[in-house]
Image (cartoon, rainbow, N blue to C red):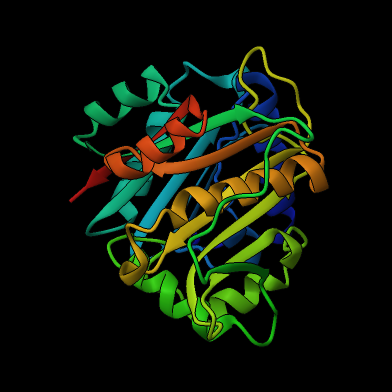
Length: 299
């Protein structure tokens, strides 16, 4: 069994994912994991064909400190056992703990997971809200705190220290490295003007709000519109700065930028389902549940 896709297969898998997204209104692969397919960083790469047409694919790659997998079947070839075969082959090929994502929490995925003895182990909520130009006033900051944009080449170390302290418990966001942030800075969607740092009078970093703008909505839903969409990509506060209202102020600063500067009308974010404090913060700012991504675990 292959561990990586060929260049031709990468193009086919991408086209297959596009067909599934068009039919389901939900992207089958995550922005966090799917880049491993193109970079050759996968540890398993499976395909299913009907003649010359690629109709199913599955892969596994490192996601933070875990091994995670995703799979997709062409909408025109579902209910023929292809998903079960791909999952069985994946489980046979890989040993040890494995996390398998279902984007959109589809009942068929839940049934497939049960048949293979997988445990529902993680829920990632996608929350959304609409925004409009001029809707947000300048945020109120604690005394001695100001906001400024991230400075590439100068702020990486400080950001790493605060991020890794704020997300020490998180399997992907915790443990970020200098290579990780530099790689993110080279991406097409990186804009330091939308990456806000809250600093004190000595320019010590207290918290941050990293926003992004995507040209297409990856999961518009059945009645949604495929339009540019903003994202609360990461928002974190240094543990020592908790209790000062920085989370709410940083949230407003990012939303204001997305509405007034980036010009998007919908903002999305992802938050762990069991992170009640963060969920409450975002609900206070008008976010509501849009979708759920579920990770099933094989121990």
